[in-house]
Amino acid sequence: MTNASFPAAPLDVNGKGLGAFPESCTTGDVAALNWNLLNEDVSLPVAVLYEARMRHNLQWMQQFMEAYHVKLAPHGKTTMSPALFKRQIDNGAWGITLATAPQVLAAYQHGVRRVLMANQLVGRANMAIIARLLRDPAFTFFCIVDSAANAAQLGKYFGEQGLVLPVLIELGPTGGRTGVRDDAQLQAVAEEIGRWPGLALAGIEVYEGVLQEESAIRTFLRRATAALRGLAAAGRLRKSGPAVISGAGSAWFDVVAEEFSQLDIGAPLEVVLRPGCYLSHDVGIYRTAAERINAHNPVARKMEPGLQPALQVWAYVQSLPEPGRAIIALGKRDAAFDAGLPAPALLYRPGQDAPGAAPAHWKLTAMMDQHAFMQISDGDDIQVGDMIAFDISHPCLTFDKWRQVLLVDEQYRVAGVAETFF
Image (cartoon, rainbow, N blue to C red; front, side, top):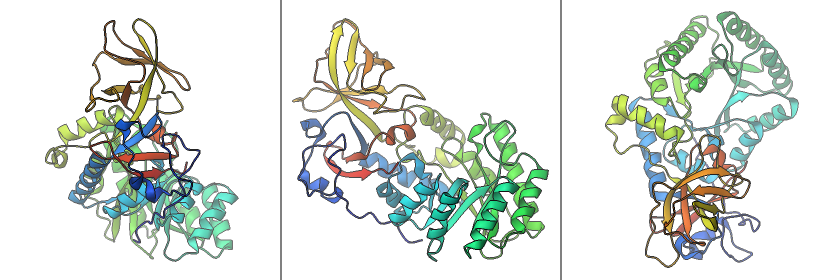
């Protein structure tokens, strides 16, 4: 596919986590500003991605996918950063997964030319966005359907536009999120798709992350492979390109690779996996998943070290109002809190040589919009103005709080900036 482009754009003067810069400064000029995090050249709080760890994660995931001979379409909603999409595509990604029509448009405007929208396309204005993009013959797009009603709406609209929309039927487990629940629903949706010249059935899509147990996930994935074989045998799949089967969030991509990589439907097939959080990784829910993968998956065991946490949020100690408590200038507007509060990782006092590990007993106990409450002990060496780096859990809900994320090297020099488009 055509690689994503990332043209330089004016640096957002209203953005947080930046230093002083000329009015004419663009995102491409940031490295030349010679900002260094430890020199207090940028405003805190600030979200940073460590370049070396991010490069490692990019290479690790691509090697994992290649070992299973499957394609990688990382879920872009994690970062919504075209600069990071470009790195993923340049490292071998088949395309980018997105969740909404405006997200697809943002990716397209920055050069992404293959998108899997792992969501239903509902509503005339959303359909109009995709129709406009499909008029570009270089653009490849898939969305998912799980109802005859949605298939009819899509078929009517895209047929009137003189376009053909490739779709995947989504399967879903009982009690889960979206997706057809049984074979009768599957057949009803497939028959409705077949009624419309404006639709082309390309394959099957699942999201296994709504399930918690590996045995249930494998059963669900085998239901998907059986469904695709059935559609192929019935001649329901499009003839204009390879069939597609897609699944995998960031927690169970190893199991999806194991189940889907052996599938044979007697016709060309692309297996597309969609983990998104691997790029930044984390120290919470995805570290737990990675530990399971590294312990049990034979490919991952050979690829030490595993994924590395590359995203941190730095903030100042703002107040020491009473014994045992520090108030940090970091809040819910700056970092995710839905899957565990940020964890103190590094401590730096301006003027020192280098950061050191934060004391293990330091712990955030609560967060407000702009403040975090940190539990400390009497006698701890901590001062107002100290800088603390926090590891986070669930990077998706940290990225969406920043218009710009700084890219820093191992000496904490700012090497670039990744804009986000949430």
